[in-house]
Image (cartoon, rainbow, N blue to C red; front, side, top):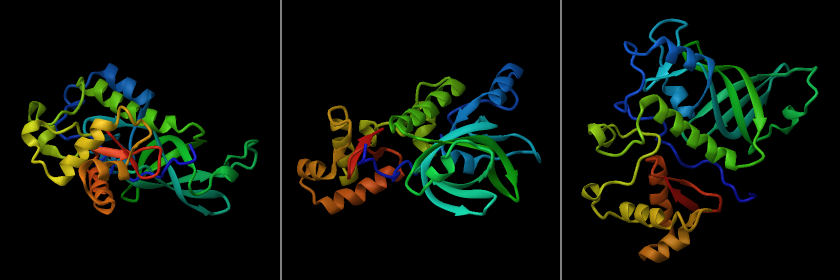
Length: 258
């Protein structure tokens, strides 16, 4: 796992606006209670986009209520304020500063292990303060198995499916995902939507080889398959990650299709 790379993709995190979800007029008290009492897996972009209609009210994003949440990310920066650590975390969809209070009575050494480049699993409650969305009562766990990163994002998708009752966000389905452009993960474009651009060809290549190259389809391989120069492939891969169609794999310059 030493070659696991920082997040470069998923910059289109979140779910499409028309994808359904809990409606404020139809959510049952049972569903609401369940939402409040459980931990919701999210991306940082979902947290950033969450809004509340009333002061001190619950935050919602695309029909999903955010109270207690969990997310994964890589530590980018740490500011030591003696009594607390201000930790900047990025997950590829965005970044957030989370304050972790120093407990002098704590027996673990997690604070000393929190350094830039370390991957963490964070839980906490979503609160608003000073016009910003913050994470309160945060807890940190160092990620030792990087499969947990992928598992978390799959959990985000699974939770969204359970909330909305949908199998996935397919372009053109119910006239939703094809127009919103901000799904967490976009499915492969339909044949009618493809125009054989270089970007489409790169995506098709990555999508084709993802099952046989689970560590990531290397840029040199893509360039060789399509007769392109590696610099151009890298540039288009960056765009595809921003569009949430591919994400960085486990190897250097390797990508996987969503």
